[in-house]
Image (cartoon, rainbow, N blue to C red; front, top):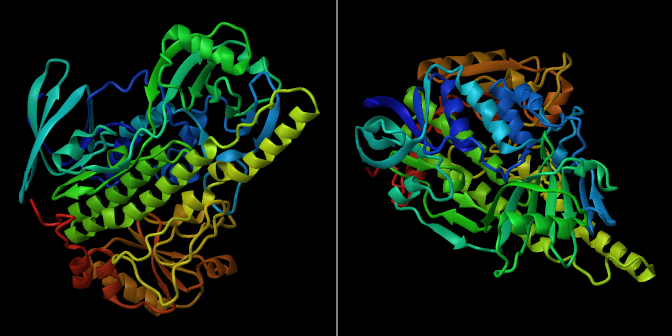
Length: 552
């Protein structure tokens, strides 16, 4: 290896780092991604790719590739079934969990998908290979970095014996996971609670297990019994399954032999279980006290950790990469002020806090359903199962019906989006209520020709025009954008559906498909200055010592 110069150095090639590299690469920004491992053979905990994440993949042109990579096909039912044991009795059932059904839905352009994380990473890496500005390097360990007003000089080491090199970059992003060296480098600390419970993650092969129980196909079977409360489900072709015992006693050791015994005990099914991998993990409730120091940022698990219930973690990391990616590109391409980068933490932190609260709430509801006599095949057992089933449906539905969390988050209140007199609407956790209020995700609409409205949005900003008029406003907006060098696409959708959804004739959409402003007349170049960080008011509101926006 030899010394390298690039615009952005990304540390970590998980979904967050790969997503950031794609978001930069499709915009022509050169970047280097270094990963200390080979990313091969990892046992995934993430298996749910949410609707919003697949919408990002649609923007990158690879949503269909991920669908094709589905081990069981996208039509496989995304049922979640609660049972006493896999060989036992059913307690409750949630169909179409996480909105994985591929049927067209007016609320979003892409359904969710049950697919192991390593399959998603394969699709992301394949997309990177088509982007000439992206350099992906495995078995390269990040060692250190020093920054100055001119940029950042990082030192990395080739684990294969290629030696150590310096990488000069304008920015560094640590997408390097829960034990992030980049987080340590910028002096960020994780605040909250750790070790909320003790759990195992076991990957095993069991030919015939899918036909050895009476509950039909599902993505997860939650086993509620006093012997081994746990979750298991099909993971991949080749009879590959995952098994996750929860709240494991401290004195229970994990070996291949004990793992097989635990599966038999929990499921009540005697058969051969080939243990492929096993590890212990502890859920946390943690968030970094800073996401940035100068030119160095952190994203994904490096800045937020929470229980996996709800499947938010990996998806939230990809959303981080999109938010930070378009803003870095805008600054590097010269059409946004560096002050725009302050909005990354300002906008993402409230989203992280809400998701962490949701995940921790799901964790709390997890252990509250055990009752004596659940497996008794008599009237008392039936009564107990009915009561537990009712409780599960009341307390656990938020975990599997969370579209309001996945799509309903907002950046309202950010100084980089417009404000309105009325308060910002909130979307409840379980139901997504579309809104074009500035800061919210642009409401989705299917067009008459079968395309998604999102397919018309540009890589930069988009001015959506929902009626036949406003020619003068469009000319003014186009002229303002041209004079400021801001990329702007004009999209006319003069349909009653668009006007009703957006409640405005003109709507300015950000590159991440969130609403920046809406109104009945173009307000002038000031709105473009605001949303690109050039407005003095926005800079003043964000140039805090805590963010170290100008501190190098």
